[in-house]
Length: 128
Image 1 (tube, rainbow, N blue to C red):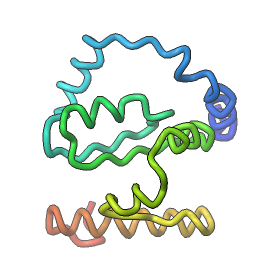
Image 2: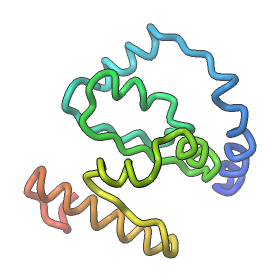
Image 3: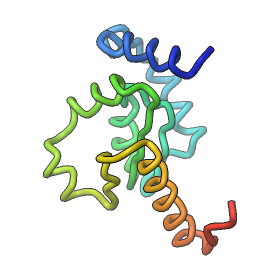
């Protein structure tokens, strides 16, 4: 399946995504346990959709949550449910501006990732 087809599918599904969600608290709890979600951890939620697990991470005391998704409409739904931008910016450890090209955004994300790895693990930008 082509990348754009995946994006289109999830963008079209975004409006009703949360309404059709069926939560199984026991399964979610097991997933979060297996992922080691506990107080003080940093969470990277890849393919976060509308961010339905973000409240669960917060309840468990996650110190930092980064959530990304390929579908802009899924992300837009999450943003619409968030606090005002000025409140979020005041509480943020890092802000990556989304005001340029995709290549610029990738460079900004890579630079932040490199800086965080270096800070946490002493890695250089050439190490993985």
